[in-house]
Structure formats: C-alpha cells, structure tokens
Image 1: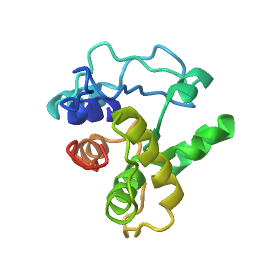
Image 2: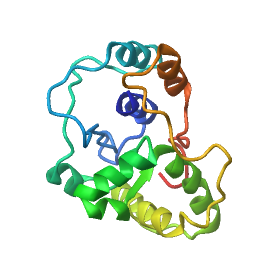
Image 3: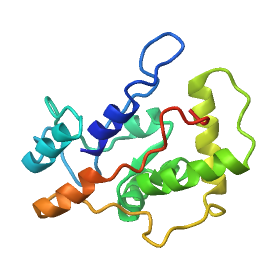
Length: 173
C-alpha cells in the first residue's frame, strides 16, 4: 500500500525529459515473490488514489538494494531486518516517517547540493539526510508506522490515512 500511495503522491514530479523522476518498488525481507496484495490494503490504497492492480509481492534482493537511491521502510524493525542481509542500506535507509521528519530539517538547516540533475540532487539530499538524521528534532510519536498486514481493518485505515511525505514541490526535490 505504501508504494502505491507514494506513487500517487509523487506522480506529478517529472524529470527534465518529461518522464517520472521517481521509480518506486515495494519489497520485503520476510516475503516471497508473487503473493497477491492483502484485500483490505488494496481497497484502501484505491480509496486514497493508489493503484493496486497487478501488485504482487517481491523479496528484497541485492539487485533492488543496488538500484535504490533511498530505502524507505514502515518500521525501524523492518530497516534493521533489511540491513542484516544488506548492510549498505543503512547509508540510505530510513523509516518513512523518519525521512519525512529529517527532510524538512535538512532543507532548512543544511546547504543543499547545487546540482542541476534532479536524480543527482536527490542522491545528495539522501546523503545529507543520513548524515544529519541525529540532529533533526524527534517527535513524541516516533518514526514507525504500524505494519497493517494481518491486523484489523482499523489498523489498515489508520495506516492508509497517514500522509507523512513532504510536498512534491519541496525544494529538496
């Protein structure tokens, strides 16, 4: 669901060539390839603008890790689990809420890379976010979003209703 909602949120951000600036892929450490999406997650994704059609699970792989400029997880435990298999994730991995918390701090407090290429700029911002994550103020709620899989409809709804992303028009992007 998170991948689809991110895709919906960032869909209007395009590269100078006119195509999408972001390539998003959902993958998990504790799944196998090819599972269908949880029906409650699929329904709520569609309600919030996501497109669950054709979704199937994918196991996190070395190839996906190597291709990623940033890795976003729902929980700190997910990030730790992924880093056990792929330690390089820690250099560019965040929980979704952590990234949403740290990014505005970096934009306000740290000189951003003066790079014209949006993809290179994003990679630079991710490096700055990782280097400055300890300096950004922490909220009382923490940086985890409940994993809704196998949980109640209320949990699915609470997760779907969250919108922790910075605006696609953010100066960092």
